Amino acid sequence: MNGKLLMDLAWSKSIEVYHPDICHILRMSANPVQLATGLGFAEGLLWHKGGYLLFSDLIKNKIFKYTKQQGLEVFLDHSGLTGEITVDHSHHIGSNAIAYDQEGNLVFCQQGNHAIARLKKDGSIETVVNEFEGIRLNSPNDLVSGPDGSIYFTDPPYGLRGQEIRPDIAQPVAGVYRWFNGMLELMAIDFYFPNGICFSPDYHYLYVGSTKEEERMIRRYEVENGKLKNGSVFIQENANGIRTDKRGNLFLATAAGVRIYSPEGIKLGMIKIPSTVTSVCVEGNTLYIATPHKLYKFALRSK
Image: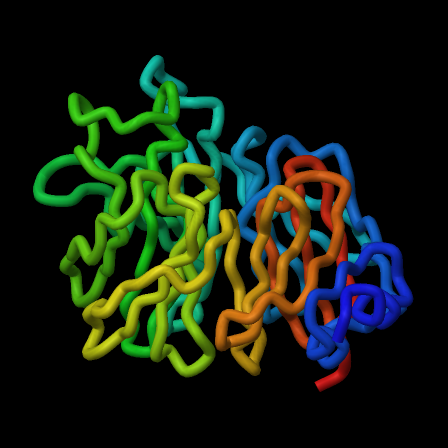
């Protein structure tokens, strides 16, 4: 199918079509709908089981709740840094990714506290982990929960002054880690700036990406008994957030918009957004999209 015929499949000017299978994923007449604006730096989208959207603001150091009825409300204050800002912090001190653990508690990355934290159902917050081999973590960025109760997360230096590795005060590498049964294990050091992380729906694969042009790749690892093996470049794209739908299609948060790939790595299409996309979240027939200062939603095809 030639390029003109592919583009004829898009009824919306917000959609770029690279493969006809995109018609099975996106509602082709849809356009992004703005939900909120005026944000500092939005990241870490999560659909809460209570029926609302959560996200982090790295600048405002808060987790916000969004509902259609009430708009934006503060869900958690001082979500990423609970102490004072120091000369060793960057301006990205807030929380970042948010997920559920196996017990249904919220777990989230605290860039300012260089930690993974847990918000328990009674409202208390506890630190899950903030160091590796006796040295503080850099600034945990994105995380996912495994079916065995483990937590995998990336630890780039974006929360550090200069957003560079600082072996004098933190980890000498930016790693991909696994927290399980009270133990932290360094699983991979394939990136200098590991960022987005995501499981395939069957948990057989783990995807990790970076936003840096010099490491323009999404790596895919096989997961076996909690370990990562056979890591290889799956897609040559930069991405901040990475999420999959129930069929394993990948939604990548990129500088150009939301790029969509099949489970086989075929580039299917893109939703154009007028700013760099920082995070995505798939919930039912809706794709939620964050840019630094705005939230959007986009309609997906019924499944």
